[in-house]
Length: 86
Image (cartoon, rainbow, N blue to C red):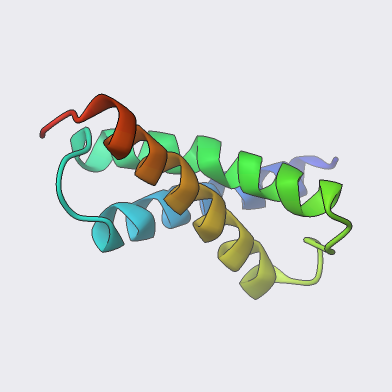
């Protein structure tokens, strides 16, 4: 993985965390917490899609969609399990 690809995934993860936190309402750790969880979720989403054999390097739009799905999964799981309120 090159530095540019890593930087792109970090940026996409931050964007996906913000979007997922905006879409999933009720609870959470606020903007910063949702962005951090979204960053982790984007990495998880990329790993899951690669493990399933789905190309995640098809462009920026695909990367955002994959990261968003991973971020929604992680933020949704956090909100179902820990019931934190911002």
